Image (cartoon, rainbow, N blue to C red):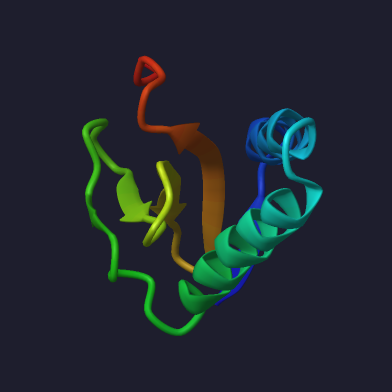
Length: 92
């Protein structure tokens, strides 16, 4: 299955990187790699995330971080919808 990053998810990733880079550029880069690696696992294991709070979505918790990948499994692809910090309000 192909992984498709939606624009909002890419913006979320960029925002997280910018925020963390202010204090720790190395940690920011490590987090981005961790999120990207987790997203890449979805290619082979699309159902590893739990059922999402919004119908039709799934959530993959990024281990040892406060971030969640919100995604949707389509017939031939996986759409990464959002990268959400757990302290943020969940989108409707």
